[in-house]
Length: 596
Image (cartoon, rainbow, N blue to C red; front, side):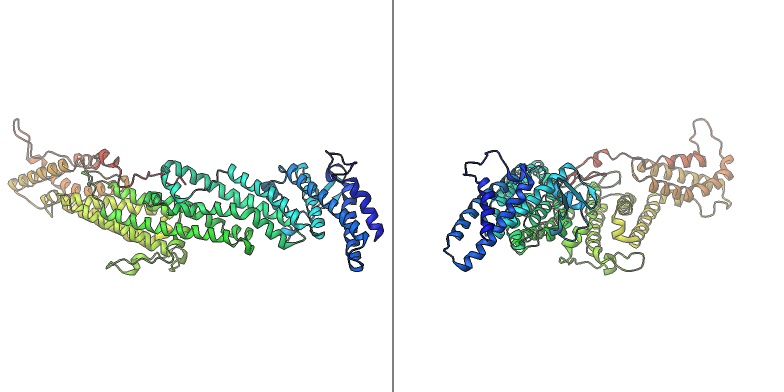
């Protein structure tokens, strides 16, 4: 044991920070790795000697000598530990560490990180030589782990952890600052203009992914690697450097949700973005912050989810009330109401968040007072079952669409013309069905719902044809091939002319925005009108010759009728379509409020 002390004294005094042979710019682990190995070996022997002499005589001179040498050695290792952490910040950044660990994914656990074969100055990992950056990182971590093991084994773990915490905590804070993360309370958020706040939300959404997947993940790996000899110390160390930063990071969504400023329907999509971000990262959050000492971090993430969920439920309620209270005017052309466009675009974007919305609505059942059967709110899939994960979303979407349709029914009664009311209903319901069919909503609402409401569109269109063209249809005899007197033929053509001209003139400004629906109605009208008229026209047109100064009795050829019908439903809706409904217009292609 005395030889151990002598050997340690020889090498430790050589690197004594206060000794005469110490070179100020020298680094033990940087200049000569063999020397560093001898230094660690000497400290290990010194520790063994101390354990031996303390059992024999706790006040022996040899023990006192060994303790003094140990203090010198630990002071030297503290400096080396600090120097390695400081000088290798670039290769020990969390993103590089996490990326390197991903390439070494065959390791069985975090503690297996950097179990590489070190052969002289070259590192071989999984049989392949690594890059210079990986080599520098591997050497630095190996040196840090060697020093940490030595200091912890010698009873100087606190000193080692203090240095580590100081440097790595500052790196986490600096990294989050560079990612745009800042501490904000609800009152500060409340004072921000929405454009500024939205920019901060976008910045946070980018930051949280990078922070969890790279920053905190990399720091956890590094911590577990450096302090692999003591899980307790690794836990304490990682908790110390990450807890405050992580709580602040995951606290932003909760503070956002607490702000009264965001409680309006158009802000919902940003709230859903925040909710989805945490939900998607939750598996990683649970793994990275698995220690009991970091339960506060997970609790903060959960608190943000809960508060965001509460706010989103409030916004959904406000959205429903806004539909019910809408008092905007109906389009004079009978086209698609701005309310319909806004609501359906809103619901389409809401459907893109079906996973998050399903979680939020899971414990918030719909208590709607409606005579409709429960089957109205279910969405059968191909095998006849109902998807549990989407059923709550389906019920809520079906209800909101029903609220919209009821509102549209009320608006339709404001038209003085019954036919225009039916055209308005056909246009708007067709728009609703089209938005469902051509978006992710079709998976939520199901084929049966689409089919049922498409049939309703046809019913409205049929009612429009029946009421809007009644004068034209009733002017034609049920059997146009029957024999009529000249006077009767004259009356038939006269009634048809006046009915057709009046109807056409009245409807020339009416609009069917959907080309397919417009063509279907035109074809249907042509089938009801033109064939019977053609029989009369072919049979009786020679009976009436046009006389100068006398209005013609047979004014239209069958082809003329087809041409007139084809010119219908192109009325303009400029004044209505450019209106902003209630909370602002959602565009057809992308929502201005959530920018997905």
